[in-house]
Image (cartoon, rainbow, N blue to C red; front, side):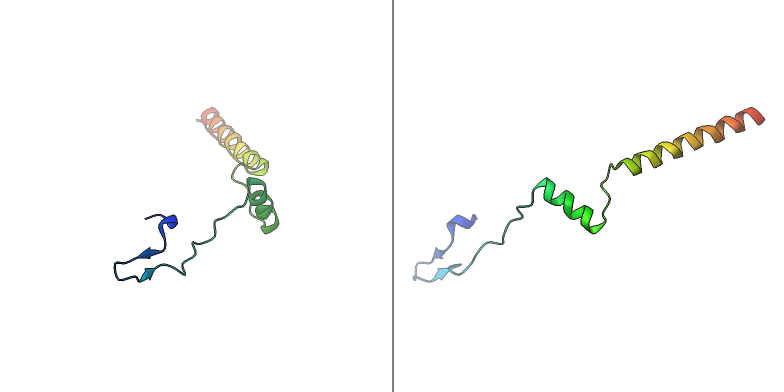
Length: 72
């Protein structure tokens, strides 16, 4: 059932859903969501800081395995 079909009127004349108003929809743009995340301290999924952290971790693992391979 779509919201445009309301109100429904029964055979006896009773209107069902006459006072119903659909819930408001979220009209936030991508920029609004971005700035809201910044103001709330939520870090984006692919932030520079997170990418640099993962790159440093991978380089650290490569260095550790290289050293283990040299001393083995």
